[in-house]
Length: 343
Image (cartoon, rainbow, N blue to C red; front, side):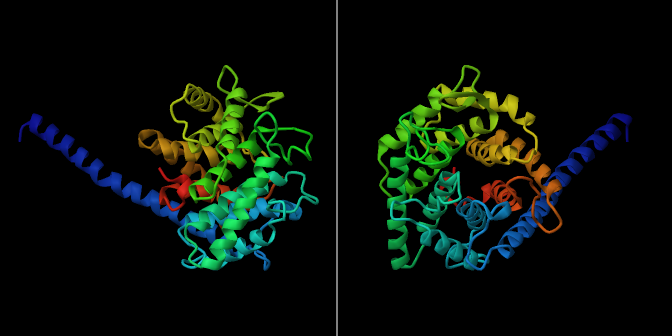
């Protein structure tokens, strides 16, 4: 064999080896992620209270934590009647349904100074359950709860088109970006499930986001100001996508801002990193292709490395159920089980 042929043979062998090892590497990565997800879901299921709910540290925010944890279990593919986590999902649904108040608010405003988070996340969770609910009586109950929840959300909207930590009346018209995104995604989940949602509520919310977008693409904390916030900007893109806005001038500005600033968010105690990637992961997944693959490889490796041996993720001020539920939702986007996250 000549030297030229020998080098060519080596080169070809290297190429073939690369082709052979790439699927193996991907399989190993996917297997590792699958184990992380399984441990995390089991931890969530095992920490549910007998009443069917989860809470943040010190027993706070039960509606929000229950809805987020329930959504993570739904993303696995279980429903209220089928699957490994059907019992936990059913108990979570019952807990939130029983916390629906006559005015439509899901949750308890007493002692909860940020009850709109729980309301918005609950609308999203229950709207995802509705499509798979087989029991006619429970379906009718869910439809009633969600119909009144939409009415409450409309009445809680501020004149600027956003929402605050509490309703406009209770909060004297204060609005804030992250709770606004939570309401819009909950409303879109309801509309997708067939619950009537007045078009002007979402239209006013989209206008609110656009009005809060600064020239550099950052979305400010409130319509009153507060500077651009990377986490709110990431959530705003998901919000616009949910509202059907993929092509306006705002989307590329927001995407560019997030690409430049998200890496600067640290895993500090208030959970801004997790909130940002809870939404930005949805954005990248919707975008698909290389954008999603690059994001998935980077963020999934980070989340796998940070998972605790018991399956949870540690976090400060809010607590581990928040961080774990958010991370598990990100890690399960490719399951495509929830309508709100489907491409």
